[in-house]
Amino acid sequence: MRPHAYMYGKKLDERDFDKTLPPHSKKSRDPPPDHEFSYRWFRGPQKEPCAYEQCPRRTSFSPHDWSIHALGGSGCSLQCVSTQSSLYKSTFCNSNCFVQGWKSQYTIRKDTPKTPLGTGSSSVGSSAGSLNDEDAQSVGSSGSIGGGLSNENGSSGNQNQPSTPNAPPRGFVGAYSSAQSFNDYGASNFEAGYGEQQTEEWVEISRDQFYIPNTDDLGRKLKLEASAYSSETGELLMHRVVKTDLVLSRAPPPPKRNLVTSKTGGGGGARFRILTYNCLAEIYATQQQYPYCDFWALSWDFRFQNILREIVDVGPDVVCLQEVQADHYEDHFYSAMSDAGFEGVYKQKTRQSMGLAGKVDGCALFWRRTKFHLVESYSIEFNELAQRQASQVLGMNPRSEEGAAYLNRLSKDNVAQLVVIELAQPSLATRSNREPINQVCIANTHLYSNKDFPDVKLWQTWQLLQELETFVLSRGTNLPLMICGDFNSTPDTAVYDLMSRQAVHPGHPDVNMNNADDTASILPDAMSITHAFQLGSAYNTVIGEEPKATNFTTGFKGVLDYMWYSAQNLRPLSTAPIPDESVLTQHGEALPSTQYSSDHLMLISDMQIISGGSRQ
Image (cartoon, rainbow, N blue to C red; front, side, top):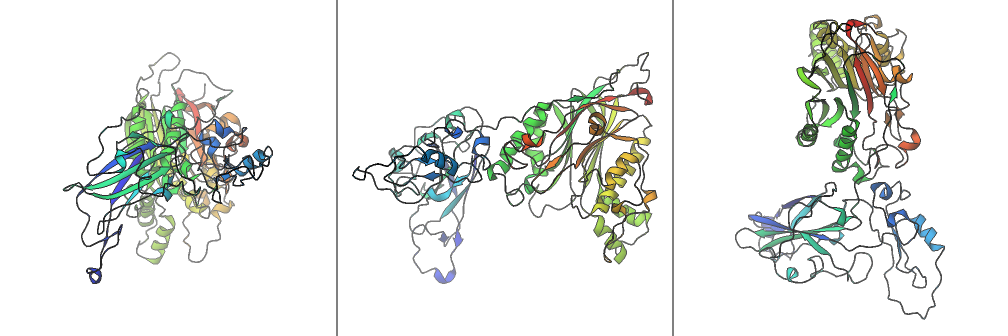
C-alpha cells in the first residue's frame, strides 16, 4: 500500500488579511512551510463479517466471494436494529443472507434490558483497498495550514510485516501515549453510523511509509494515520486518517486452459509457444465503461498481478501484448517480464498524452532470452503511412481540403511492431532438414476500435501487409511470419477476408460504404487490395473454427483477436480453446471480473517451423 501524502493551503484573499482565521482553516496568509511526514499503520479488530452461519464470507476472504457479483449486485451490508429481535445488532453482508438469517430469528420480551441503538444500516464494505473518509480528521491551531491526504492502495501479498518502533514521532503529544489511536483521541469515540461507543482497539503494526498486507490482515480493516510536522519547529501542522475496507486475499488463478492438439503434426522443426493478449489499459478501465465490475477489481495494482501471473503461467516463448500503457511498461511490465526471463520492445500510439506523461497505450512484444535473441526491430505508425500514401502515391496536398479530409479519416494513432528473432540454439542441418530455418518474424498490432470505421481498419490491415511484404520478401522467401494482435474485426469483415483469402470481394459492404458527402474515400479499387502471403489462422486451423469470443463484455461478445501465420513455413501444433461462457460468468456478469482482469481473453498457440518451404 502506497500512501500519497501532500500538504496544501488556499491563499488568503488580501481583503481578508485582518480577519481571524478559524481553527482547521485551509486558508493561510503564507504558503505551506517546509515539512516532514510521519506514518502509523493500524490493524483493526477481527469482526464477524456476516451473522448468517451458511454464508461463505464468514470463512473466505477471496475477492471472488466479496465482489458485487457474489454479493448479489450490492456492496451494502445490513444490520438488524430491532431491539425485540434475537438478531439485534447482527450484521449481514447482503440482503440475501439477511433474509436467510431472519428465518431463524425469534422475538425477545420487551422487558429484557437492551442498549439503545441508532437507526439505519451500515456498510462494512466489501472491497479490498477502498477508502473510508468518514473517519478522516484534521487538526491544527488557529491560523495553521489545513491539509489533505489521499491513499493509493496496492495489492496484498504474503510478505514480512514491518517492525513497529517504540518511540513516538517527534512533535506529537497526547494520543501516542495512550492506547487510543489519533482517530479516537479528541474525536467522537463513536463508530460511524452505529451510535455506539468504540471499545475494540486497533493494533499498531508499522510506522513505515509503505505497508504490504499479509495473512494476519485478512478479514480486517487497516487504518493509516499520517501527520505533517514543521521541519524547523516540529509543530504538528496537519493530520489525516483513512481506513480501508476489509483486506482480501490474492485472487486465485483462473482455471487452467488445456491445449487442443492438431491432427497433423510432427517433424523436426523448432517449436515455440506464442500468445497474444489485449491487457485493457488503465486509462480505459473505468466504472463508466464496466459498471458491472467492482472498482477495486478495475484498479491497476489488482489487475496487473493477475495479468502477469496469467502470462507467466502459460510458459510462453513469445508474448504479444496490446493496450499496454506507456508508464506501466516502464514501471511494471518490463521489470516483471525481465525478472521472468524475457526481453522486450515497446511502441506507444502516436497520440498525445493529454498532459499526463505515460497515459497513452501501445503494443509490447517480449521473447524469452533462453529461446530467442533479437536480430531486428522496427515499428510502424499508421499515421505516417497515411501521410506517405497521400503525398507520394496519390499526389495530394495535405493542406488542401481533399488532403486534409483524407488524413483526418485515416489518422487514428494506431501502431504495429515488427521484430525478427533468432533461435538462441539454432537447428543444425541434417539429412532430412538440409536448410534449417532459425529466424522468425513476429508482427504485433492493435487496429482502430470504432465499429463505424470498417474502411479504416481495412486500410490499416492492407498497409500493414504491404509493409510486411516489403520487409519479409527482401530477406528471402523462407522467413516465417506471424501476425498477432487485436484487429477489432469479426470474421465476417473485409479485414478477415483480406487476411485469410489474400483479397477482398468487391461486393463486400466494408468496401462499398455509403459515406456522407464530407467523408473522404480512402480505399482504392477492391481488386487492388491484395497481398502475397498465404496466411492461416492458428485457431481455425487447429480447432476448425475461430473462438466463440475473444472480447466478452455486456455490450459485445465476439472475436476480435487473431494469430495469423505463414502457412508455407509455419505449422500450428496446438491452441488453447477459450473457456465456456459458464466459466467466464462464474465470478462476474462479463469481463473484466475478479477472475479475468481484462475484457479480452488470451490466445495461445504452439507453433513449429517447417523447413524446405513445404509441409511434411
